[in-house]
Length: 333
Ligand code: TXA
Ligand code: MG
Image 1 (cartoon, rainbow, N blue to C red):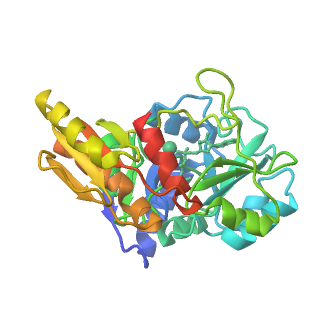
Image 2 (cartoon, rainbow, N blue to C red):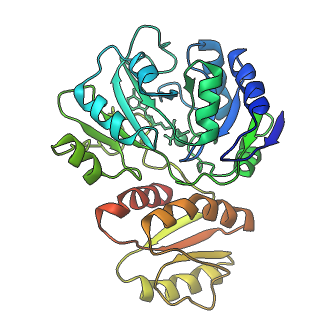
């Protein structure tokens, strides 16, 4: 396996050509997108896609997102292209939005876990965009982490967890959005928000001119509209504890309890006064975009420091923070 460092805004065309050759010949390439790093394979090559599932230890029932160079190539993979898809694609692509639509026959069943729908996204990171154009094939790419663990926002995170299982890692530094794309299902009559992201519900609803539904997630067992949305997901090794409105009071008590049990304690705080017993304190930015950008990197670093429990101050309740709240809740589940 090789890692190649490249400029995030002007990637070297020779490196991109090399990566595209690996993809076309059935290999796995980890590459940066604006959201998180993806683990890519030629979406039209079932054997190559199978390698993604093996490398990640991903359950076969969890379908992959197919990345496309532009709206026209995305449309070419859809059996039906609703007007909502056209409108959202034109507004938010290239960007951190994924659309689920009925799939064409040429999308292999392994990509969609046998479903009749496919998740499509046109990423805007210059490295991902260049790679898609050069490869000339759509690229199936889940986040480049072992199943159910934290998503990678840096090449170092990919190497730490998947190094050795990937043919090439393209390293372009930090992924600027920092959490996974918003996923909207357009395959039925009413559009459904399957996964919140930094393109938020109100932005989508403005373009759609109607309200988005949210899936009624049966907790515990049972079929889920988005098979990837397991409660515990995006999780660090450390135990995450979300502090409620009583955060300031709880922090001191909980920290002392954890220290008495011999634990290494971390904390992600916005406003609350830090407790002197906290081992690794991180002041988080009071802005949802900035918070999202550093969240996974911060959790990766706390894991590397050996933190066993991490207290997290609750973030604001408004819509702009919805995606951050979702990821914190999943990491703590
Ligand atoms: O930002 C992102 O979306 C990143 C980058 C690499 O693009 N990718 C990513 O992929 O987060 P992954 O595999 O970690 O998450 C894909 C999500 C899962 O929750 C999966 O279940 C859902 O999309 N999904 C994929 N195909 C689907 C389909 N046909 N119907 C419903 N949900 C689908
Ligand atoms: Mg993932």
